[in-house]
Amino acid sequence: MDVFPLPALAALAFILGSLIGSFLNVVIYRLPAGLSVVWPRSRCPHCEHTLSPAELVPIASWVLQGGRCRNCKAAISVRYPLVEALTAALFSLSAILHPVFPDLVFIWAFIALLIALSFIDIDTKTLPNSLNFTGFFLGLLGAGALGFPHSFQTALEGGLMGAGLVALFAGYGGWLYNRFKDAPREGPFGVHLVHLAAMLGAWGGMFGTMGGLWLGSLGILVGLLNASLNARTGKVWALHDSLTLGLAALAPLAAWALDLSPLESLRGLLVSAGGMALAGMLYWWLRNPSDKVEPPSSEEKPEGYVTVMGYGDVVLAGFLGVWLGFANLLVAVFIAVFAGAVIGLVMRRYGGDNQIPFGPYLAIGGLVAFFYGTALVQWYLSYIGL
Ligand SMILES: [Zn+2]
Image (tube, helix red, strand yellow):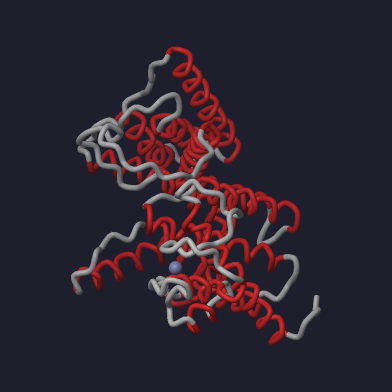
């Protein structure tokens, strides 16, 4: 649909992006504080002076005021104009790369959500469920209604397998890191149910997609029954991680030995784990819909158990999986791990605070893979001679 010539569209996208970026600054600041993102109007955090329209022009106001409040002259962080400029640049770039409506509106939402999530993760080490699940369901809506960026089935499978991949990375990682110690039991809906569903899905999957589907669904059903048993009895009934994770790891090997399908077994493993993890996170989110980040209390963390990743990363991987599909999600995770290693090394070299969480890296990987994932995979395949 050629409504605008491309340069005009890119310029309009830049202006729209800077305005959305200005709103994202508000979201990034207020959402973890448990405040409304639409009311009241923006104020200077130092002198409480309500900002006038002239002080709210993205990027320009900050530059013209020399980075200071017009009323009290307190310094305003350079991060505000940077978030606005970043959003503007990415909106503009995406308009050039994919000038198609209404797809572009979905892409802009994808970019805006990832920017808000990244900065909130840097500030608070949390990824708000409201943003993660908005991205997850918006992606399913786009795939279902427009077939963009791919079919609904690719989106749903990508989301479940993406969440499953990161959930099991956290599950196995924590289990190994803590020397096979059982994870803390959380009721009624905890990680043990994810590991149980993963194990059943892995053993079902080896009989092909239908087997995976049936036993995977059975795994999720058993998990839900387990959760309701926990809720009724007020205890947490759970199989030890060493049993469920060990048996899950055996399934693809057994499939290979029995001349069944090891790949389908892995697929059943990921789909079931992801389905259960997302159902669990949805349950906790609906029980406590606030994104307010409470100050950490010493009682909450069970002593001596270290988790490799937060479950916020699991839902983010589900969100990205819906938008990217599973193949490109793997590209995104690869970029994220690589970027994390490089930036981590650089920061250690220069003695910086090496505390950037994984979310922003996943977001960068997700954006690159969304536009270039397929091209990168094709380039790599031809590079190794396939
Ligand atoms: Zn002020």
